[in-house]
Length: 321
Ligand SMILES: Nc1ncnc2c1ncn2[C@@H]1O[C@H](COP(=O)(O)OP(=O)(O)OP(=O)(O)O)[C@@H](O)[C@H]1O
View (cartoon, rainbow, N blue to C red):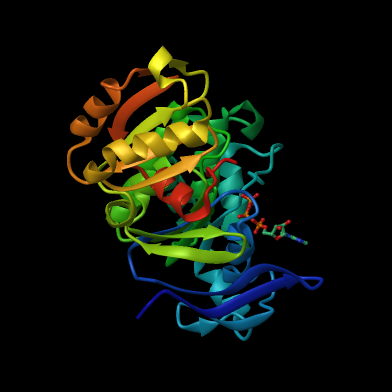
């Protein structure tokens, strides 16, 4: 049985559509992601999944139950990590977990054992008696995730789990989330970090302006839309040789580059003063062809293709634009 089934799911705020008739399914024990820029509708979608925000139209079932009919039952089996940490800063680390356990009516002894196990798992055991306001941002985030697990949920929803964390803290959170997945917990996360999506998600949807543009596994999506590599050409502040004078603007130069390398490409994309070339199979040959041109580009690089390229190709914008 799928853990979440959404069909033509729609959310409007005062007549303004935030989520526009989307369909998706989350499978048991997978990590499923919503990748998209700010305002794409990710938070709105997860708010409907954890029954915080009513569905405007369409069908949404979580753990086999309709969100409009069984919100209480659904909530009791979910763990939720909201975008903003909402820990109680006046309470100590362990107390934060115990108070939460109380909401779920977990017996005190069980709650204490589980809380200590979770603190251990998230590398926070030695901070159990510290006040929350003494913790670093990364520790608070891990504590928020630990708290979401206190009721042993069947599904954990994480809204932008590592936004605002430094790279080291982010990697530590990813490591723990991967271990949770190995233990069989179904994870659903929203993110605008392509690296987070690639590192954690088995499958994801790319969302923009309330719609799902694509669905698949991260590697499969990159292979389908882009290929293995990208040659990125910076067309701003170019230095041209005399004989290359006709190519004075980006559009002309981009057209000329594509003309010369087309036989080596499976596609290309011009965005602002950057040109992205998608080599058919030999990125090095494309790079060489450009290096042979009498132009010094503002930058020229051959790099692995990423989900960011997929997003750019689908929307014409960057994820952080
Ligand atoms: N409570 C609300 N009332 C009115 N409009 C809202 C409300 N919440 C969200 N919106 C609008 O719905 C759209 C989708 O917002 P949402 O927060 O779901 O996007 P998001 O992808 O999660 O982005 P972010 O990463 O910024 O949270 C936006 O246009 C937003 O302004």
